[in-house]
Every structure is written in C-alpha cells, then in structure tokens.
Image 1 (cartoon, rainbow, N blue to C red):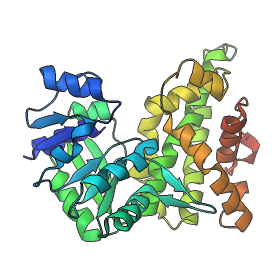
Image 2 (image 1 turned 30 degrees about the vertical axis):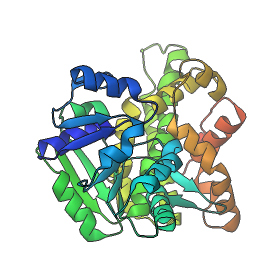
Image 3 (image 1 turned 90 degrees about the horizontal axis):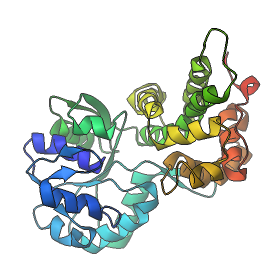
Length: 340
C-alpha cells in the first residue's frame, strides 16, 4: 500500500523516496533494476527513488515535507525507533498502518500512540495523521478511482493533506474523528474474517438442490460487523458516521472481496482451525485481523468488566476471539445477534 500511495503523490507533482523495510529488499531491488514492482505488477513512476531500510536517514534528507508510514501494525515500534533516530524537526507523519494499541482497560489509536512516543523521545511534537477507508493497493496502483478519509485531530492539517493528495482518481475527504476512523481501519480486518467464513462454509456444505450459495449468511455477518463496530467506536468516543461511511462499511466491503483476512475466514469456513490455517494455506503470511483480535482480547474483556462496553452487544467479536485464542471451530452465534 505504501508503494501504491506513491502514484497519486507522483501524479500531483511530488518527488517520492520509497523506503522498504528489511522484508522488502526484493521489491526495492526490482524497482532499482527495471522499475517494476513485483507484487503490484506495475511499473513505478520515474519520480520514485527506491531505498533500502538501512538508508532511511539518507532518504529523509533535508527537504522532506511529509512521511507516509506503511509498516504493518507489528512494525510500529520499529518504525518509531527509525523515526526517532532520524527526525531532527517536526515533519508530519501520515499513517496507513491499521491496528489499535491495547491498554490495560481500553484501546488507543496507533496515530495517537505514535505521536505520544515521538514527543516523549524526541522532545518536540510531530503531527501524526492517518488514512482510512476502502483502498485496495492493486487498484490504486492501476489508478482506479479510490475514495479515502484522511484523519487528524488538527482539522486544518486534515484538510490541507486531503487537498494535497487529491487527483483525478484519488479522492480523499478530511476528518477529525481519529478514534472512529481508526477503530474501523483496524476492526474491519478482524470482522472480514467472519464474512470470509460464510464463503468458505459454502464450499463444504451439502449442495442445495437449487445450487443456492451462502450469500445470505455473509450479509448477516456483514451487518453484525457494522453493528459491533458501532458499539466499539461509541465506547471509545468515536463517531457513528465513520462506521457507516467509507472507513467502516466501505472498507469492510472491499476487504471482504479478497486479501489475507478473507482467506483466513475462508479457511475457517472449510473447517480448519486458526493454527491449521496459519500452518497451511496462510503460512508465512501476516493476517492483521487475527493479530488484532488476539492483541485486544484482554482489553475488550476489561472494558466489559468495567462497564465501558456491554459484551452482550459484541457476540460476533467474542466468538471470533475465542476461536482464534483456543483454535476452535468457528460457528457464528446467530441467535445472539441483535437483528431488531
């Protein structure tokens, strides 16, 4: 996704220095060699200059006016360390990393966590914004129309970034609902697993006489996912608008179409446990929805115990967490869903 974001940057006249992590050496080498991105299968714009992870300080230079952070949620602390070692002035950071920071009895948005740590370790404030909403990397790399939300607690910064990023096919909207956007950005990956389960289940169910599929079940799970994201968002002070808008419903829709979270759900639907899926069809993959569920399980439990959230309103989330933690077969608790 970080590489795909380089497209609208370049197409709006910006020069981009693309820095890979230690896991991206093959990608950086390919771009250096023939300009091709081997995973996105596109030729990158000539304005992009690729750098390996050990060259971050060099890539940052003296003239950088924006840093886009696209590591996985597991790499956030590593990214903070890199930023602390290289930043000499407050350059705005925009995150496309999805996830939440689990606390003892609550959760924090990752942009808020990064901003806090940078200020603590650098001694000056660094503006941190984030991007949420439906954005498939391959489609953006092909310059297909894409609408996102750029969120910052600083309204002026969100508006300035949205205007700066916009082009004919990349259509961002500004928002100040940091918690709402970030809850959706993280939990849509988690809930997409359940929708994927319905499609995987279809493959092992006895064939219906009329060849019916399992799309009704997928739709019920999609609806329940939106309802539960509403509950979690409200408990953390986020806005409902983000859940039914592009960060929530929009992003959940595209995430359910393909990707690792959907593939894990597909595997669970075929009867595999989480451990079996990760050792088999998803070996060596990072499934951020599952990692999020395991990371926030204790936080959600503590929030329920304190009354911050009602666990009875999160039957789908709780069922999936138990499935992941205990390697159990997943079965949606249909009768516990709040369908009224």
